[in-house]
Length: 106
Image 1 (cartoon, rainbow, N blue to C red):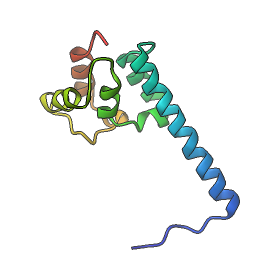
Image 2 (tube, rainbow, N blue to C red):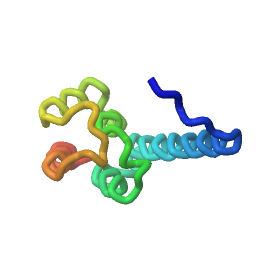
Image 3 (cartoon, rainbow, N blue to C red):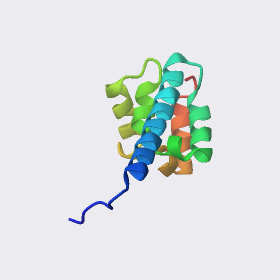
């Protein structure tokens, strides 16, 4: 297995800060979903424009919807024939439509 590239301390710090900012941004979106101040369509639209949000797993987003826990989210993904590992940016048009139709009220 190849070794990771050697980074200078400044490069490493910058990478750590960038990763932390991305985690904060994804957590903020999930919190807004859970609070109801953002809906699924808005998150999907945002994922088209924002690379950080596009890397969120679809399952994680569904788990953040109000009234939908881990079990119901997984069941919905299975019923819609969407892989649990699929990220928002990787969803196809039919998969997006199916999710929006299924969770139109959220």
